[in-house]
Length: 162
Image (cartoon, rainbow, N blue to C red; front, side, top):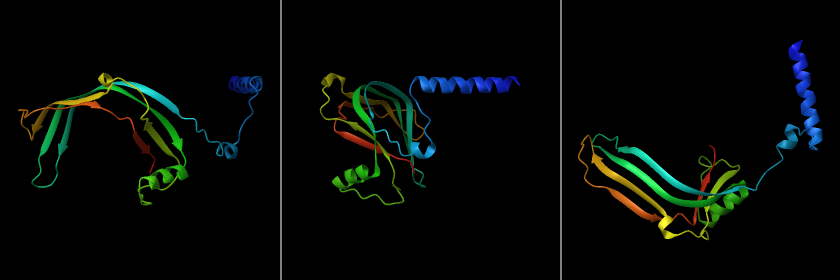
């Protein structure tokens, strides 16, 4: 009996709060027709580190290379939007890209864009590095790699489910 009273109280409070804010319930069919397209913008100060990254060639004569002490630091800024199939396919056509149906089956796509017109000091552009490179099981490093002033402005990334 107590659970029935609690359920009724919760239903009453929910109904009261919806009417107080002028809200009305929306059915699944109606909700499926709603599409938000406003997106979000972001600026991120990346300060990332990765212990190791190993690439292993699996053919019989293959070996491996291990990058250690990986890191990245710098600013990136962009926007994330959901675009429809028509917009995505138009974007791909603009770049001369044809995606097979086995790769893209249609539907909405997440678009992450890093606009060219974002102004940021060169000193804050992304730096990426690996402090060691080792072959096979060796502990001896034969060098390191560093990229400075990596500028992602003008880059667009599309993501979808499959």
